[in-house]
Length: 221
Image (cartoon, rainbow, N blue to C red):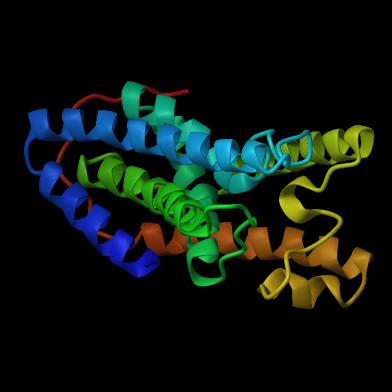
């Protein structure tokens, strides 16, 4: 299911990027799809009385990145694009490969919304690149922003006894579960080192990808 969605949405994103008017319309469609995906999941959790401080706040990296995609697409923000390209997009790919979907009364609808949300984060970054916005090649600013975000979420978890960013408990049947089994200190260190390697590796890779045509409009944040 997830790979079919990725292929279809990705193909439509590539097609839409070829014309400026189509690209602008497609940006609105991606934004609507992101909001619909998040709203559907929240509604399905509310329906089974599981919508609370533990599940409703958009503090996981994927839901946080999905929200960032909205102003990124609407305002063509290069700064937000850098964060999504280096952290949001790879974080969105992992749940497609290792899904951890919440239980509800409508599992198929939940799965469709779950996979669509993560697919559209990838497509949002893809569209920005196809429109000519340069991929990030210097990871320092993004690493600083990521650590500030991590600290803020850790403080939130501490006060509200939540598990955002899976800092205290890793989802089952994912690579994070293996790391968490090695101990909490090693788990947190692994998350930090993994982010460092990921951002550095992607920055190196992005620097070797071809530049696309000039962007329609760009704003920095």
